[in-house]
Length: 146
Image 1 (cartoon, helix red, strand yellow):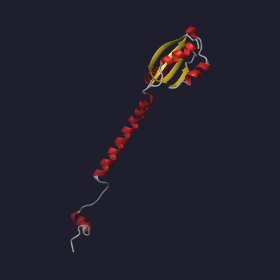
Image 2 (image 1 turned 135 degrees about the vertical axis):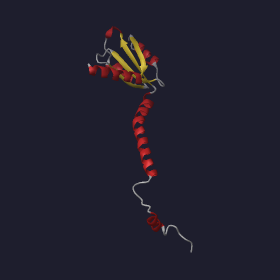
Image 3 (image 1 turned 30 degrees about the horizontal axis):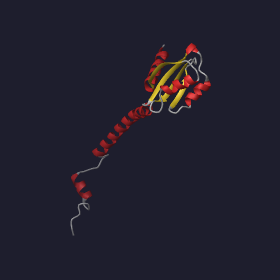
């Protein structure tokens, strides 16, 4: 019969004074690594998802000649154009901010709609959606501090 080391393991450990206390170093390092990775993911993943969902979006800011107010029907028509995510008026209703996906539509689409409706609309600015959101947040913070 062959000698089986497992049979006498407990006796050997008792004689040699080996005691199992707590968790092993490998388990502890695995837990610490997992906590660090989860913390990093918790911090970085929402920003990455936000970037990926808004990287193709642009904002076009239009204003009608004579400071007239945008009609609700026209704003609704702009919202129905393919690639337009949002069309909203500013607080006074004189400016129209159109958020659109630049892969599927462009400014020529909006210009042709304005010409079709015989409106004299001027493009004030075209800016990345993320840049505009950052600017709005900075303006909001600066107005709160005043």
